[in-house]
Image 1 (cartoon, one colour):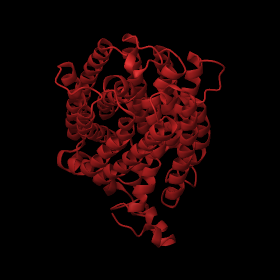
Image 2: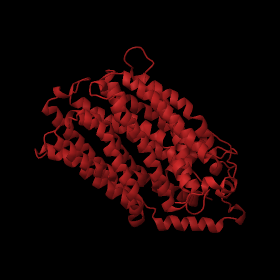
Image 3: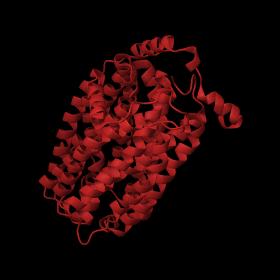
Length: 491
């Protein structure tokens, strides 16, 4: 049964979403700054960084689903998720600081990067998987789940964009400083504090609503039983289709983000002012997403919204590069070039985030389909699978970017003015080809997701008809009685 029946209080939406700030900090760091930091600043070959992150994903592939499974099996008076959200953020903050101030003599090696990446990724899973797994527990309403994900994505982007703004105005304010290590160390320390505050603060603010003993004690944990249940969950047809489409969409996002520093610096030749304005452009696109995604879902449903938005994003992302190759684009670095690029980027990023949020929200409906087939709830297992897809995609996107950078022979620390036009042309061509293939593949599979709104609502109605009257208790009622003012705001 859901923890909250009917419309969700505004306060709950805000504090639940706030926990995703930690994901935004991590995603911004890994996607925008990690490869340039280790490649251009510390002098590690781009292919070595990409291979190290890909290796870390192999470890994730084995352990991440276990984190989700263990979250599902956690049985405390604070529920299944909160203990994870109180414990994991502290070691995560420590490792995040070390990632940007590597505790190694000389240039980090392959296994040094692997060790740091594995630690950060696994501890972030221990925060993000339990947090996002609360969504299908809090509500079973098709649209309210989208609302929670709207707030999660808004908070995640705000966290990432805050780090970008501080990076380009405080930590790395000039193209020259972006090639020095000192600013990255400050970036890491501030991000670590923000991660810990977001996760622990969100958990504490939701405590009264979600801190309840689970209705059923799970069976004893065993490695064999855990993997058997995980494999059974991941064989769910809807999850397989989601994974195919979501993987392509997330890889595209990871590649687009990780190549941003390269294209903004060497293709579009951003000035200091353009670098500072760039986060504001992304923020505007996320605000537009926040306003339009729910109406789009009500009109089209999540699968169609994900597929159409992916194609729109592809068109507006790649359009400027195609025009540049055709000689029909203003001179890079000029005001006209930057303003036009920003205008198209707003549309492109809005569409891309709508596609990603639609795909992520679809996972919540898989929970009820699996429960109908097996009689088991596995929110943590499915969202660890979704998280694994996202992390594999981020790593895959960074690996693709590293291969592109390696293929164009761009030496570490190369100044903006020293990159020739033939290098820029190869960078643009390879990016457009990879982006087009990924977007088309992702849109095809996301459009084939088999769970519609009507099917989901029928499953929820059938479950309610089988539910004993004694279980029809709303924990929010207890919280309201305990503190009426804290829950008085309505949507």
